[in-house]
Image (cartoon, rainbow over all chains, first blue to last red; front, side, top):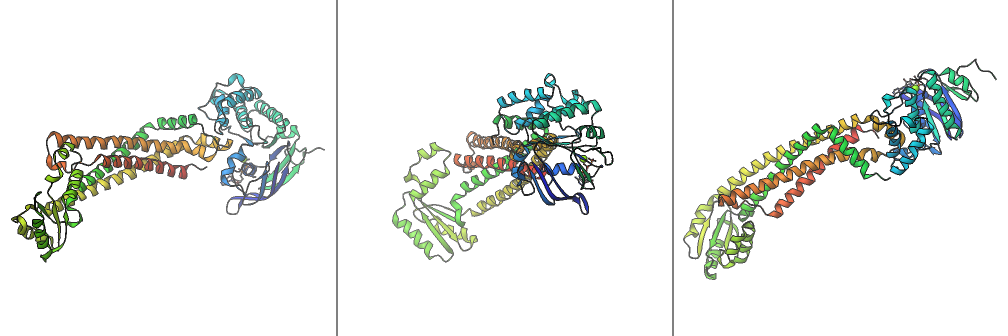
Length: 231
Length: 295
Ligand SMILES: Nc1ncnc2c1ncn2[C@@H]1O[C@H](COP(=O)(O)OP(=O)(O)OP(=O)(O)O)[C@@H](O)[C@H]1O
Ligand SMILES: [Mg+2]
């Protein structure tokens, strides 16, 4: 599903954000990406979303090679990928319904399709009774659930999450994680960058640790920090 | 990919409404500059109609009597041939002169109807080696039998051509400056629109909207501004033209009637104005989209 081979990425001269990264993630996996601030987690996710091109190396996502993909194909590629972020990225002047529907409108889906799918998705994230509210009338956790509904409305093969619980209290964090787990159980591959020790340690999923742009550790039922692992 | 008409209309009109003051400024600048350009074109066409008899450097017109005999005409012709001051000349017979008359008077159909071909004087159009010889050569023919009138008023024509070319240059220069400012204004309106919608644009990119889907509403916004400005300018051009018509016919200013342009010329001018509006609007927004919309 995701394959990264010898990827280097630097923003400035001699300041690498990714150094010789190689990894492989299968369909349906749930993977945490951890590492200190500035270690390259967001950069890795941006490369997988084709928001950045690697300097060298190759990246396959959902069957497509990204470093050679022409710009006009990128929008069609992104329709197979969902993405959520620490800052939610909702549109403040649209309602909950409008925010989720927007993702369908701008890829040319019909009104009927939108009317069918959006309420269903809001039901899934538990916000059907708040569909007419605006983002600033919601808690952080609810806003992130709207963002998840928007990211998942096209049933993407892969969900990329960059610190989705970074702005949330533990209770809201757990409700978001519950949702991500459910989405993962439908067969969607989830890749989540996080600093949240509690979540990583209690979920015991695959953990990839980045350190100064290098992959330092790749563990199948891992924990957040080294030395705390139990077998 | 299908872009729904409803979406495009909604987005474009929404953008225009949000930036309505700046859009208005852009539209007004475009209308003023295009109205000026249109007026300059009409002036050029009017002058070219009024001076059409003098085309090709003709400095001397010898009008024959409409009923002059062939012998009288030949006498003038052979005399012209023998004069050393003359570079070239040609003869406009009655039927050609009548065609020209009809063209010149296209705006006064009654006059054209009241005059028949046999009433039109044929003429010799003479180009001299030295324009200053026009009065002396002209006076040679003034008293000749068969000659109706001699016109060597090239000086006045030259002055008129000179003045109108200066006026035209000033108007066109002004129009160009205003058109450039209009494109910059449009560019700026679109830049602001892009900036105020950067969140929407970011989300659109994230969920896989195509580049054209993102660009089209912004491009259309510029196009609409250019088009509206052009329509206002086109109306102004028609206004100027009918005002001129009114002045000429109401106050019987016959001198000016030579300057009346045909409706064909007016239509061409209007087409030019509308095309320029579309070009300026699209160019301004295309540049803004290329420069500020990173898709
Ligand atoms: N747009 C950019 N321009 C220049 N340098 C950048 C840019 N984005 C990231 N970097 C640099 O690249 C490196 C990796 O950044 P990245 O954002 O991937 O780290 P991160 O692991 O996501 O950090 P955090 O945990 O704080 O989010 C850092 O040194 C950062 O300063
Ligand atoms: Mg980051």
